[in-house]
Amino acid sequence: MKTQPLPTPRWRSRGAHLTAMVLAIAVLFLIDTTTRYEVAVSVFYTVVILAMAHVLAERGLMRLTGACIGLTWLSFFITTDGDYRAGLINMLISTVAILITGYLAYKAEAARVAAHDAQERLQRLSRIHSLEGLTTSIAHEINQPLAAIVTSGHACRRWMEQEPPNLDKARQAVHRILGDADRASGIIGRVRNLTKGAPACTRPFVFNAAVREVLALSQAELQRQSIALRADLADALPLALADSVQIQQVVANLLRNAMEASAAVDVPRRTILLETLLVDDKIVLRVSDRGAGLPAGAQEKVFEAFWTTKHEGMGVGLSISRSMVEANGGHIWAEPRAQGGAVFAFSVPVAQEEAAA
View 1: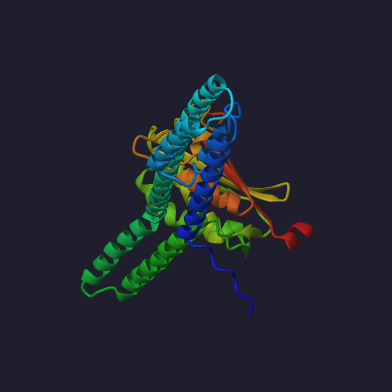
View 2: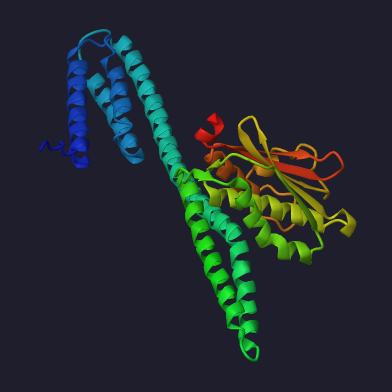
């Protein structure tokens, strides 16, 4: 079996750099001392400082700069050949160049350290934000099945407290509780997979049947809020190719938003129209309400995370819906309703064999 070479220890790499630095400084000092005053070899100490900027810490750079200046002056006083005045000028120029280079290297190193710290803080904040987004998404999505579980639990207790207990009705309530619990578990798994970028579990399914299941779960809430729902489901739709559970979540989200918008207006205006139709080999679902409608310029913003027009809303439902629809190869959009209110719609692809037929 072929083995991978081991990485060089960090202390060895640093030791090699320090050794090379000492040798380079010694060579420069020797050349600067043995040449004439007119030859400004000491200015090449700046190269050593720049080369060591990524190795030494800030204090180490300051010490290296001071050492290079000291060696430059020492070499000047030791040298005896050449024009003394030219040597003095070269020594002063070299000193200024070394000082400037050391200062710039010090500031660059400080900026690099600050940038590294800022990047680490940004990564921590990003992880925290991702965790908050995941938690908010899961809380938002499982709210409906948990509410259904509570409702079925109260119903089961009422059936059991009757004399004699209505075991058949209680058993049906328990089955509903188990079904909603499984649905909540599936939602958690799918939202987690969605945040990880995992592909949707697509398979052909009957689109209208999935929509009818969502409508059946929403009947009690529609009646409680005195909202009239009209479902206009197209006949003979081809099979949809998507994750049916995710699509049901999107339908439930759009329907819940329409119900919230309708609850804010007078009872005569509390009507919702839900339509399915086939458009260009895509199955389209439209949910229309007669609520307050969308503010100007909000047709795209409503699908952004944490953007909402509701006072108590979290602004994640439509963002999650868009992620789910796009993960299934579809598109979601919003538009104003001509008679007042809003229309939310999305499309999903049809199964290939159905499209071919």
